[in-house]
Amino acid sequence: MPAPLDLHFLDMGTGQYGDCIVCRRSDRSILIDGGRPGDETDNQGAETIPDQLAEIFGHPAPFAFDLLVVTHVHVDHTGCLPAMVKKGIVTAKHALVADVDLAYGRVKGAEKFSLAGLTAAELAALAAVREEAAFEGLSDVAAESLIAKAAGQEGRYGDMIDTLKNAGTKVEPFVGQDLSRLEQTFADFEIKFLGPTANHLEICARAIANGLKKNSDLLKEWPALVKETDPVAIFRMLTQSEELGLLADKSRPGNALNNQSIVISLGSGNGRVLLTGDMQFAEPDLGAVDAEMERLRAAIRARGPYAFAKVAHHGSGNAFNPSVIDDVGAKYLGISGGEHGADHPSSSVLKLLREKEKELKWARTDKNGCIHARITEAGVEVKIAKGKLNDSTPNP
Image (tube, rainbow, N blue to C red; front, side, top):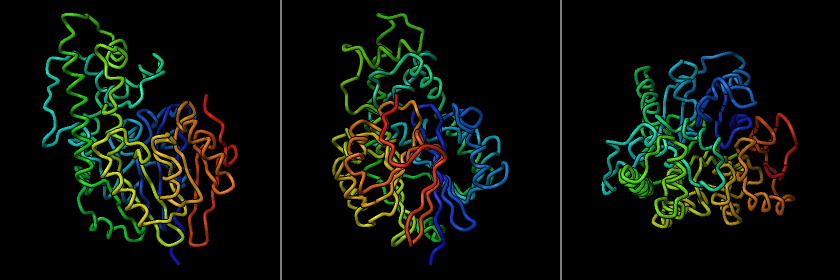
């Protein structure tokens, strides 16, 4: 019988969103994503990521992982990984990282755009527009925080990859290629990378490029009209002005970034696990990718059913609906996010979970803190740091 598979969903504190998952089997470990920038020193009301890792491993840093996976290049997933890698808190023998060119729209057939000539404030605001998929209701404080985290992210992410390589990590950027060799290296986890395909990733990259071009072109047209130096004000103009902004544009970069998420299956038989990043299974909000999303969902069904699954995109309605439940077939679910993620989990997802309460068990890091799920052929055991299972209370 295979050894137990242990999953730890780390506590994301009071902030918005955030994913950081540790997978362990026997004496080997995988780290998937890294919370948010700054979580290595201030995890907004929760223990820092290094402190939580110390509790899991039973020793202080450094923490040596056999595999590091970055599902996609959003700041609430790349998070504090660049800082932890730079400081030697986290090391890895292998790393599968979301490709930086695809994440920033640099792909054949994409719109050509240039950021030359933009001010530092404009570049910071543009970085935040690339990050966010939903701007409605975002407070000035939240916008300022988003801008601070997004500014310079590409450089930090690239530096992290270089640091890993220089330390001897076998780094593989994910571009939708065959990963059978890496799967064989981690055969003890019975790992399978289900997608997305190269075409899926490239469709999303073209959408990212399109959004960045529209916004950067607007910024270059503004000097004759607007003399604005506050990044938050620039962010507001880009996202809320009917004349200038792209609020109604469903192809804006945030959705496309989510849809680049690496989707992973671990385990086999009655002990299979599905880990999903921010993939928008229910509503991709990117028409060109619909056929590829159906292929991905078919691959998930073919691999399933699953004993335990991560609800994608922090429990957003664009990631989870009754048909996704049917595809996955899991009776145990985990949701990762912070206490201030007001729409994550969304009201529609919480309503659906309440309706399925007799059939499903779920845990949420925003209500339950750190989640430990042990999966064996015999079943699933879930331990939570606080609260109760099946909490469907919305966040403030």
